Image (cartoon, rainbow, N blue to C red):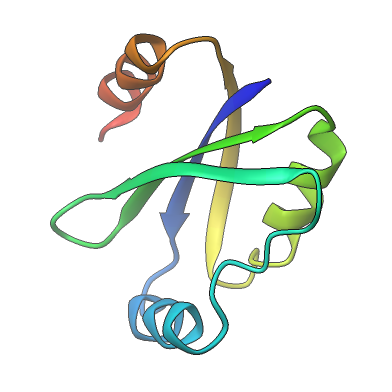
Length: 91
């Protein structure tokens, strides 16, 4: 299943997010696959396409970053549907 993960970064979290990504990467567990991601120009929101057969893996991955961002997980079927999700939630 394909999921759009919408991350809304908490105030002041951008520098820490960049540091962790450079140092540690995404920390994906087996069964969770990164597909693609986009970040807005203000570095306030990130949209990530992730694929997994087990939504609980995705929820666990999101829980590990809750001190830096708020997460929303939306099931999507196609990249066109993912783009529509991005457009609808881009605030």
